[in-house]
Length: 512
Image (cartoon, one colour):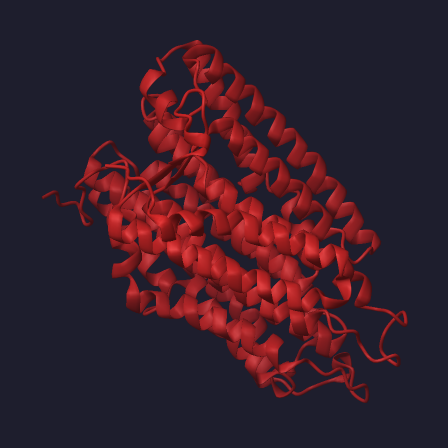
């Protein structure tokens, strides 16, 4: 049963929103202390999230009616196991990305900087925008109101667009404009769907909508508009065309956050709507269609990653491929509660592993660009001699993407295979295994020459570009955390049971 949060959890809920917003204002007003405000914001959010997660684990689903107004008039904040896990992974990835940013935003020496104040412009606006985006992410995960979710999606899209364009380069500005247009289009589609839902049910609370929704043309149109809008933001193939440019041209910590967290937020909403709001409308045919798009994403994204000439572009196309695994959950769901629960859990667990691994890859790529002055893969031979920690972090992150044990990625793929074999999804099992092999190809395409080759002129020999230690070790920390997720799989799996759509369901096709 949902419970009102205790005092500590209530303050935690407030802190997840108020703390990053307050520090974002402070960072904008006093930008010279940007690093201080950023780290203070990260610490405050992490403490707040810890209080909320503890409340969920101890008391079950937490709900809080804003202003003591119950739905349909009021807005409800709701945190179940899935929300708590999303808050936690955002806190971990966001906290490490904040540490990395302290070193990344440090201006280069005058001899190496393209402008005397290189880095200062990014620091001036990075912290306010990043903390604002963090607040939007937290608000999205705890909101139980469809229109409130639209507001958070808009805030998320606007702040992410500004962060992509932060360095002011032409390629980044073009990518940011494309990102903005896609974000606005997807938001309009989502809002139209919410309007249709409200017209039929007279409610905006997700639970009330699920209770009152009747199958029909209106509800089917609403579901189609909402899911389509969210798929645009999630960059599912073939709607992925905006992602590679945006993720590869943004500053490294921004790329890590976009790939590790932002696209996962909209996938989180797809899960919510598909299994909890539209369970009667989400037909097996629609699920198979999303599964086909996911399989195409795995194959196409992997192929493009193998052909990419730049390291960050390779990692960006890898994100397209890895997102495809998440959408296999809709094809693996067969109607059997045990199989559906296993598939749903597999997608969420793989999301956690991918968030840490992919963010680590982008952070490592940022360190390589700082050291070499470029990220052209053909000219990175022997880069491990210059940046052994960063390349080791890239390799550990790659273990997760390939799905080798004992990584979190292995646990996620193992659960997917379990659901596929239990639910007679042999084709999807083949796609999962093939995707792992393709991941190994493009990961080794970077690692082999980096560790075996000798440094060449493409690494800026004779020009010392130092990489702060906090940048290298931040990337390694995230990669190791993603790897260690395989050793602590029981905690997120148990947490996912709290408030799940399949009460009492068990993994591996068994029911109590």
